[in-house]
Length: 216
Image (cartoon, rainbow, N blue to C red; front, side):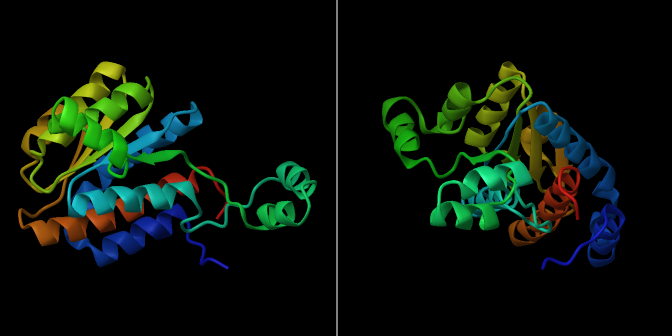
């Protein structure tokens, strides 16, 4: 069984462990509200970044697509339907979890290599969003400097598609801090520390979004 925490407890634990990040709570709450509203309207979250930030992109998607701090069992009606498929259906009924739709744009090797070869590597994320994104979706772009051109291009694409963009950067914010709708600037300019702060912030963000949809 997972250990259950209320939203208030989640925020309290975050604040106790990360006192330097407490001033970011209002902007984190804004990001949670935007993502929650998108999900309520059938939207999806797209994530991208480079290097360590690519790993963070995959990490966020993993926390959204399956249970993070909540059990997320599928509903009784769906369980009954799954069980009609025999032994494998029984396993699925018992083990499948409720999901929040999310896509990691950094793992699509075929389209990224095609874009890099045929057009321009800077567009490797923007091109994917152009085909997959729609009004009401959310883009989370991650860059310690805030100046990653391919992530910035994705932010521009998101804006033109009617999506909301959220940036995770260091304290300067860079060009992403100017272009993205919601800018989460952690209080450091040192890459390893920025990445450590990012993990703490998106863990809280994912936990709070999850809590809006699943019983704790």
